[in-house]
Amino acid sequence: MTKIFKLLALVALCWALSACFEEPLYHSQSYVFGTLVDVTIYGENNDRANYLANHVFQEFQNLHNRLHAWKPVSENHLSEIGQLNAAFAAGKTPIAISPDLAKMLLEISKLSEKSDNLFNPSIGKLIAAWGFQRDELTPVHIDATQIHTLVQANPRMMDMVVTDNSAYSNNQALKLDLGGYAKGYALDIAATYLRQQGVKNALINIGGNVIALGKHGDKPWRVGIQHPRKPVAMATLELGDGWAIGTSGDYQRYFMINGQRYCHIIDPRTGYPSQHMQSVTVLVPPQATNQSQAGVLSDVVTKPIFIAGAAQSSRMAQAFGIEDYMLVDDQSHIMLSKTMARKIHWSDASVQYTTLP
Amino acid sequence: MFNIRRSLSASSFRHYQQYFLPGDFVVLLSAILGVLYLFHTLWSSEQATKVQIRLDDKIYATYSLNQTREVHVQGKLGESVINIAQGKVRFVKSPCQGQYCVHQAWLSHAGQSAICLPNQVSLELLGATKPYDSLNY
Image (cartoon, rainbow over all chains, first blue to last red; front, side, top):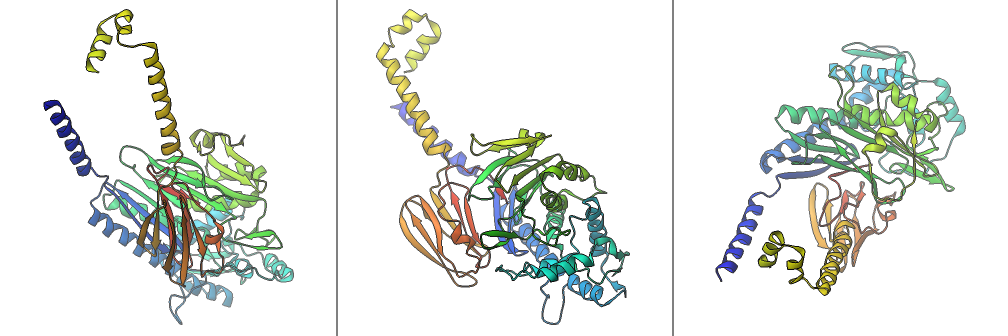
């Protein structure tokens, strides 16, 4: 009898302890940058985590308003990028810009150059021509002449002249669209802010781009990688402290015409959406402070690899110092770097893939 | 049970045979295999048990997947209709243009999700274990 009593006492104790040690995991979600943003914080009390996450969402909203390529902040009030684009279209008169925007533009120019201009956020006119500067996508009438003219105008980031507080463009066709940069930049801003606030462990996800701080308790954070054609995660991997992961795919923003898929990633050389890849994923380690940060790289580097194609992928990844990357081509073949192959855990054990040299 | 353990560690194989008959091994083996089988099907296949529906930045509702139910959620654009059907769930109607959420079709595994960005309605499948903390897409 005493034995049973002891056993019951033990069970009760375990239950009480588990209630005390309920995981200090906070999770919050919001819609910013036209996509879903998730903030997960581990190890802070709920009220503080809630306060910090709300601050992060607020900063994201401010960035979104400032950097938006086509939406004015309010009626008669363009976003900072909108004002800049209006000035570029008008001529070569320099316009005043905020110092942090100047920094961003200089960084983007550098990254664009590294990518042989395949990452080219100055082709806003092409992006608009394909109907991707809208919240809801519908098939557009493809105007080959217009596309040809826009490609001939050849806008490049290096056409822009940026000082600490002003900018102008030597090319009137230059129209900025920071859609391939802003979310990554926002990841870095959030990671820096949370660290400054003493947060050790957090996971931030902006529209699929993820950055990690610390761990999920005693285990590393684990991230699933979306299959480009099925509603499942094709694999998972651990995201270490300060690491970021980004994917560019043809399955989130696209439209179909006659069974042909037109995605939002446009090859600046042809003016047409890139069609030889389903997705490109890069895993980015923490970077030195004087360089582009992990969040920015996770957003940016996938684009030139997507456009350059499998044959050029390792050269392109190398240009940005990226070792871990994965491609899914238009035939659904999976290719990945050797280092990535070691880090990835496949959801389907019988998956077929090739490792890239 | 404790007596068997004690005698096992203390004594020889012959001693241990006094307690364990060949038939017992069969029972033990089938018990172990049974547990492994159940663990595999109920645990590691990550079959979802619940669906969490979010509207904007709030949790709208969490439902068991073990039922047949139609859920109507009033989103930013209009009404999203979500079907729960014995272990699986999907968007069946949405006021959005793209209809990506509806094209996602049936979801049944823990960690799967479908998001309707225009209507700001999302659903996430929950299971006993979470296969990952966040999804990269």
